[in-house]
Length: 320
Length: 114
Image 1: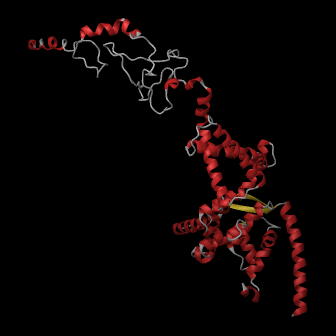
Image 2: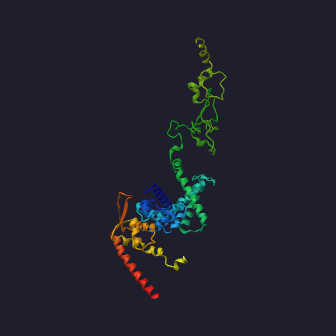
Image 3: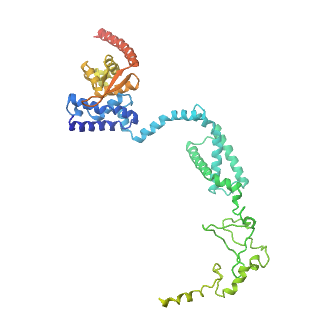
């Protein structure tokens, strides 16, 4: 075979293959498998350009497709966007998928099982929507601490079940869709927050110091190096989060948004005039070491005398 | 659409009987694609399309009426031969009977009216 003939066969073959691009891979490959050999035979026996012998590649492909029974309408498939074709193929595969998934869980169809779960969904959607309402602070209720919250959730569940079971009150379609969308978002919200919510209400971790060395501490009294009491001191951890030690909740007046300031419960100082730290060694030793210079603004500076160290260190330099 | 009613189109007729024709030319001897096409044309079906025969072979194979085997050749490409199997022969017999009945009916019809 001449090189020109090979190129011509390749070209024609590629055109035909392109026109069949929407077919499933396996069927397509099977259909195309023997074509190059066949085209070679055509050229050998009849000569001439393939297009003259066999017609335009697209027409050839359409004829091939129709004869092989792979498509209802040859032109139809070529016109549609690939996405549409994929979508239609997906939809066509759904019943089979339904059956297979059902077989795994012991039902004729997966949808049959899902249908049994519908009442569960009616309850779940009601809870999800109410939780979402709480989370977005639309209502002035504090989650489930409030009887109003429980009442709201009960009403929502009853209404949701009633709508699901009887279809009454009949709502416009778009409201139904919108509510379902909100419920799905709410469900995702609940699922995403479930670990935190559960821990918040059930676990002792909620009180950060529980079980730790500070578990018995109910209040903190900050004292500066002079032994003076400090007020409204806020402690932060290495991440910049306020540290809450002690019986924080007993002292707050309801405003929980502010970080704890120590000592807690300013109005009722429980310890005596001289707190324990003043009696012990470190604070009382400092006043003699640092004269009036030490400002109360920087209590973190230690009592070690910094200025006396530097001069002797400079003097040995002439020896070089 | 209206034009096909005015004169009988051979390609339209072929569509209905190409399966039978392909099965028939494979009854006595296996053949590869181009060979089968040649047999059909030399038998008088000049208008049979290249791609139609090829597609029909694939479909009959998929339907389990044909078996295939590859024969290497020293000159040129390897050839895939098609052969009738038992199911294909049964189909050929059944379709042949249907065709004969149909052809007889058409003959009588045309004989009476013309």
